[in-house]
Image 1 (cartoon, rainbow, N blue to C red):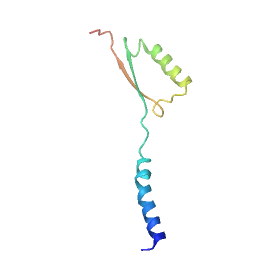
Image 2 (image 1 turned 120 degrees about the vertical axis):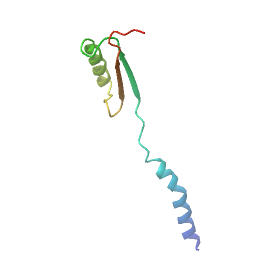
Image 3 (image 1 turned 90 degrees about the horizontal axis):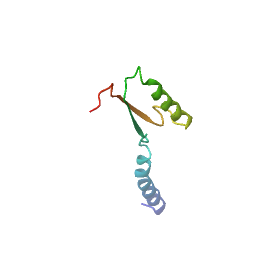
Image 4 (image 1 turned 60 degrees about the horizontal axis):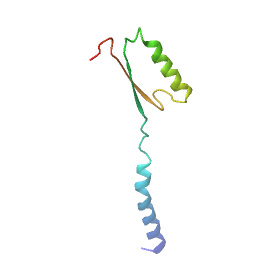
Length: 76
Protein backbone atom coordinates (compact mmCIF):
# COMPACT_ATOMS: atom_id res chain seq x y z
CA UNK A 1 0.00 0.00 0.00
CA UNK A 2 1.36 3.38 -0.91
CA UNK A 3 1.69 6.21 1.49
CA UNK A 4 -0.97 8.39 -0.22
CA UNK A 5 -3.51 5.53 -0.23
CA UNK A 6 -2.83 4.84 3.42
CA UNK A 7 -3.34 8.50 4.40
CA UNK A 8 -6.59 8.67 2.40
CA UNK A 9 -7.88 5.48 4.01
CA UNK A 10 -6.85 6.61 7.49
CA UNK A 11 -8.48 10.05 7.19
CA UNK A 12 -11.70 8.56 5.81
CA UNK A 13 -11.91 6.10 8.70
CA UNK A 14 -11.19 8.84 11.25
CA UNK A 15 -13.91 11.17 9.91
CA UNK A 16 -16.64 8.50 9.69
CA UNK A 17 -17.70 8.57 13.39
CA UNK A 18 -17.97 12.38 13.26
CA UNK A 19 -20.28 12.24 10.26
CA UNK A 20 -22.47 9.60 11.93
CA UNK A 21 -22.79 11.63 15.13
CA UNK A 22 -23.82 14.75 13.24
CA UNK A 23 -26.93 13.02 11.89
CA UNK A 24 -28.75 12.73 15.22
CA UNK A 25 -31.87 14.92 15.35
CA UNK A 26 -31.73 17.84 17.76
CA UNK A 27 -33.67 17.52 21.00
CA UNK A 28 -36.28 20.18 21.50
CA UNK A 29 -37.15 21.50 24.96
CA UNK A 30 -40.36 20.22 26.56
CA UNK A 31 -42.46 22.62 28.62
CA UNK A 32 -45.25 21.50 30.92
CA UNK A 33 -48.38 23.56 31.57
CA UNK A 34 -50.88 22.65 34.29
CA UNK A 35 -54.14 24.58 34.22
CA UNK A 36 -56.21 24.64 37.40
CA UNK A 37 -59.55 24.79 35.62
CA UNK A 38 -60.82 23.07 32.51
CA UNK A 39 -59.82 23.69 28.90
CA UNK A 40 -63.12 25.48 28.24
CA UNK A 41 -63.04 27.72 31.31
CA UNK A 42 -59.34 28.44 31.69
CA UNK A 43 -58.30 28.30 28.07
CA UNK A 44 -57.73 32.04 27.75
CA UNK A 45 -54.71 31.98 30.07
CA UNK A 46 -53.22 29.08 28.17
CA UNK A 47 -53.73 30.88 24.86
CA UNK A 48 -51.96 33.92 26.33
CA UNK A 49 -49.09 31.63 27.37
CA UNK A 50 -48.85 30.20 23.85
CA UNK A 51 -48.97 33.69 22.32
CA UNK A 52 -46.12 34.79 24.59
CA UNK A 53 -44.04 31.82 23.46
CA UNK A 54 -44.71 32.69 19.80
CA UNK A 55 -43.65 36.29 20.43
CA UNK A 56 -40.38 35.01 21.87
CA UNK A 57 -39.77 32.98 18.70
CA UNK A 58 -40.81 29.51 19.85
CA UNK A 59 -42.85 27.42 17.42
CA UNK A 60 -44.92 24.66 18.96
CA UNK A 61 -43.86 21.29 17.56
CA UNK A 62 -40.73 22.69 15.90
CA UNK A 63 -38.61 24.52 18.50
CA UNK A 64 -40.56 23.60 21.64
CA UNK A 65 -42.89 20.80 22.77
CA UNK A 66 -45.81 21.63 25.06
CA UNK A 67 -47.29 19.11 27.49
CA UNK A 68 -50.68 20.41 28.68
CA UNK A 69 -52.70 18.97 31.58
CA UNK A 70 -55.85 20.30 33.21
CA UNK A 71 -56.72 19.78 36.90
CA UNK A 72 -60.44 20.48 36.28
CA UNK A 73 -60.99 21.61 39.86
CA UNK A 74 -59.32 18.59 41.51
CA UNK A 75 -56.77 19.91 43.99
CA UNK A 76 -54.95 17.08 45.68
